[in-house]
Length: 164
Image (cartoon, rainbow, N blue to C red; front, side, top):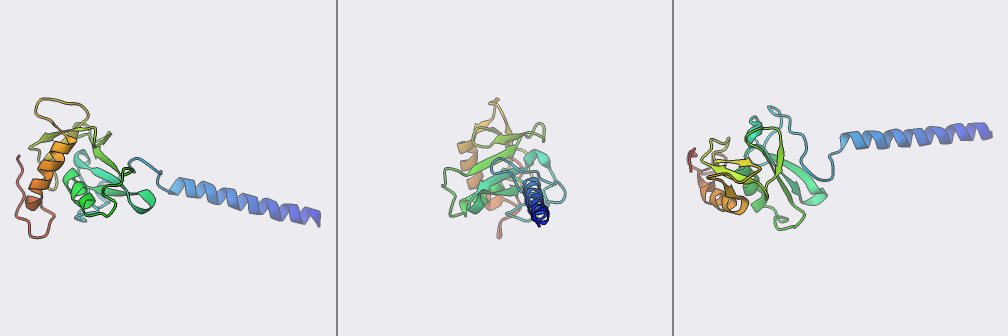
């Protein structure tokens, strides 16, 4: 009888451990950017396929601190502006380094090159350091908000322009 109980308890423990391992392998990390499957994942604002890694961006926030994916920093900012949690201090904004297309940058600390041919015509590419012609996050955000009516993805917008 005791042997049967030990076997049953051991099975329960193994099932619990397996469930925890699987959950850890399949869930998103609690912070930071998540993987984007280029050519498959879609923008959470315009629902177009995210295909150019150089301009990808992400926002993490709201209920469950969920990661949202975008094809352009301008789309990310438009999405965030419409969220009830937009002013939450825990909101993270990530943007890809336009030079490498492989390195995520904290969007608030990045600098932005205006006049770029970005996917949704917001026109900004992020770099990790200040360079001639770059602007800091808040200035980029202000300029992007002014350009929003000309962005490709908004209802009623005109065809976007590709230069600042």
